[in-house]
Image (tube, rainbow, N blue to C red; front, side):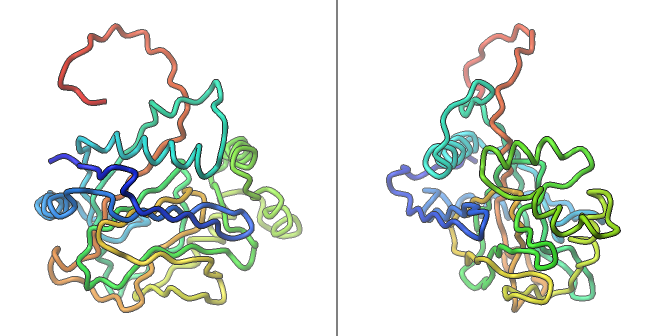
Length: 282
């Protein structure tokens, strides 16, 4: 199985800038020329169930399909040059941008509680390609935390330099909002901030797409077959599925191809002398 992209000039692309951070949400319709074949391939894949600690409550199947590199490079180039309008830098190489992908079938139990609104700050961009049947009335929602006024967040005790770089390159505001929200608060570590933002905010299905006392909805993108939505991983986001019921069969599930695009940092020379081999797609 190979991802067969339509010609980029035939993509239907919409770019939204949301919230005070102006984080981009890139919506691309008509992405794959063989979307139905990719869906059937996904339905025949071997899945594993999510476990405690996963943000994703459902089943996942890791995949590395030919054609994914082409899609990843288009996403990276479009985001860097067209959306952020950034210049090249010595520490960057968009042609070597890396990614990891998996098929995902959404299937939380109704009696469970889950961290739905979250960030994925291990990567630069999140890419969600909807492969769901038309009957699925779901989407991806984007949020601002009311207590802290944060819409962007990068966690971890060693994340300070990473936050500073993201602020400098992409124009978001994290550190000032953290200071304003927690300078006079007992919270003294990023782990405690994460606990306040996420772990104490678990919810049970169904998953609303509307604002509540904790989260203000900034935007929402509806599921549409062969639609791709791209956004920076530090933007608070979630599955929105207000009429959710557990699927009885995989064919009825909210099915997506999820990809995380790494920061396009130039790779150091490995020193390994590796021969060029025809037929290998990097």
